[in-house]
Length: 509
Image (cartoon, rainbow, N blue to C red; front, side):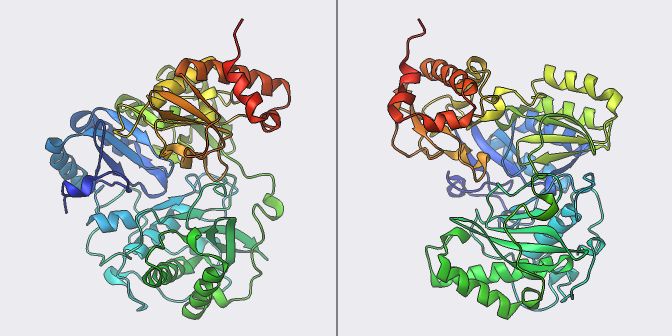
């Protein structure tokens, strides 16, 4: 185990458990959970650790990771030791950072899923952490053999021993690829829950072609996803390693390159050509995947809403702005034991509880609502992305989450009006990524004790008007009523900047 130095704990990167980040309320320790899978016993342990070693607050990130807040320099070592004993700590900060993988959380419960996304995510993580050399056999017995076309969904590649349900200590697996900390991956099972609007540098999406399940391989661009080809399910580790190695080589030629979307069309052509030359599966015959969603899944895939679903039987609870207390995580562990016994955490700041009996759903939802979880699809808080703000964040100039609660209370019609809002405590706009590829309609940016109203999702854009927190809440209530009466979000687009500003300075009389 390798502890971070004080210099390591600066702001502005992707923190982990071995390399925490200093914030306004102490150190932030991030736990990366493969495919958001969290057994009840592990959830209880994390809740206990958050209470004993932090301030008892836990964030669920937009990539389905758990973040323990308020950890101190004194408590960090003990926390890391207990995480290691539980198998929740990686061999090194580099191995931890390599596992920046988001996967469909319900592939083992969703009857429309085309593959086992959790198994594929484990395979991807292993490939990213394995020794970065092109030999067909990685360290630790991880096989990277070429596999031909025609394999079915049951042939998802997994490393030896990967069938275990609990997380284990990851060690002895060689040096990870030296990718940038924010370089990210998505594994999409092709089922009902869409990951299309969640940004990632590289994505694998399961698709059906002539009765065979394949991976559609996509690269992030400024204009959307560039689908470069398809491959057998079992080839995922090979392709991931080839993409990672090719990107590392591209960085060597372009020192400022950090994200896939920074490559222009010419750069992507060179990149894809390098992949084709290096990796046989990308040369195969299946047609180029079309724009997503495609085929019979068009119009079906979507984001889950809070409440009880019947097929599959999953109870979904949302966390207001991704925040919960340790006692709430302990409650989730208790509730999911009435189902399959393991939580599934999703990128929509949601906890999914599979296997809940329909007859128990109402009682469990009542308990969850009383504890502070969101259980209704029309809750205004679902339309708001908010960073912690001051004082939890040292950069925050406004108490973003507290003000977001006031806004949701005042503007109860926000979600029903089709509006979306980003409340940012400062101009960095950290919570914007929670909204995915589609930017929010409006952003409030904390500055000098007030909020600047910005149209769209860029916190650094030109403001329309400056407002106090109370003015912002009252104005959003008026705007929500206006848009709901006129057909939703299109009514916001029809307003000019002067008219929009007028909504916020109008007299209540």
